[in-house]
Image (cartoon, rainbow, N blue to C red; front, side, top):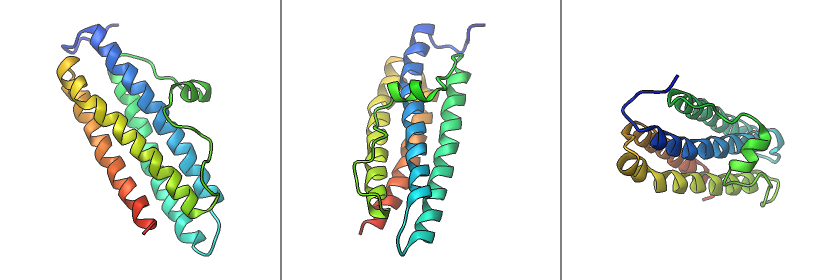
Length: 157
């Protein structure tokens, strides 16, 4: 059954194309944050272990809300690792050292990359594709990622 929400079907498809890339980025970021949680070592292990857990819990919520947004627009979500890796803007490869600061630097770059991608799409989704709801939704995602990026950045000072 077609979604009849006052947005042209072609525009909905274009919005969903953006959202499935966001979903892939979020899932890859979730996985990388989980890796940091599992593999962090050092004298501050316990605090960093808990910190990464808080971050991946927040990202897990984001993953679910992005998937639900896609479904609310009448489309199915990609849901395989192969799909996510083909769609993501991120890399799953660890570019930094396998320690707390290395993980933090890597995750910070990923959050910033997601923020930039979201920000690039806010106005076009609202104005050109006539979907103020999704534009508002991804604006909220920007705010979430900016806060998580700030918390990561604070650990590097």
